[in-house]
Image 1 (cartoon, rainbow, N blue to C red):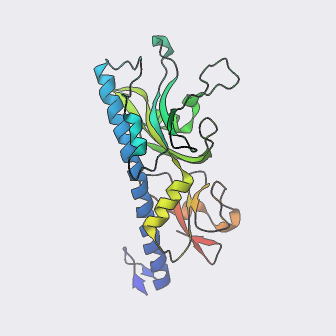
Image 2 (image 1 turned 90 degrees about the horizontal axis):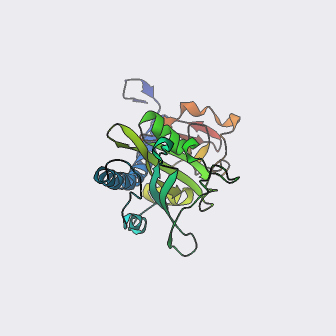
Image 3 (image 1 turned 135 degrees about the vertical axis):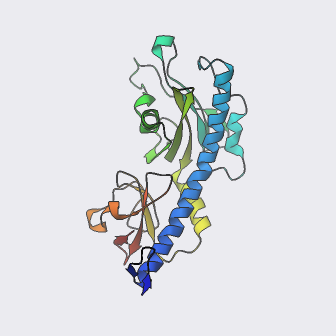
Length: 251
């Protein structure tokens, strides 16, 4: 028996789980920060352009070449850009400046969802969590996993942060990362694992899992244990749980 950080008794087996949870959590945070570093570059590029044009965002903001970030070595994102906050009173409509990597040939293309309010296929992105949360809180956010029905059709994580011109919210900078690519990169970083683990978002939905019966996108089953007891993952709205005995979870 060892002593934990507060002096409480910790069995050796429990200490191994605590240490492994900390290691996995740190690795997850590092991968998330890697993506947010790309988002920050989009954010800073947009902000410089906004300052040059008087903070109106009345025309394209991101300069040519921004999309080339998607082809940088080691890039996890397959989509990135700026999503502008509409200001109808100033004649500024819904607008995205967003590029996606084509899953077929790897070429870059602009994302062009239907932004016409009178259309049956109208996409009101202002109601999307990845846009609304940064707008309301002034903080960055991670959303997913979800199917990108307005873009590539992939299973994605979307990471966004607010863009402010002075005190005015002008939109969000963000990046899309396929869940499979995130998982592959993370597991390569982690190497061998003594126990399976599962990442849960704030809805109790599985973001990533190395446990066969806990599938990505599914809700944590009631018999698996309470998700609120997991270990928080810094920089994300996620919690980490380790799998014991094939089904029991522990933070």
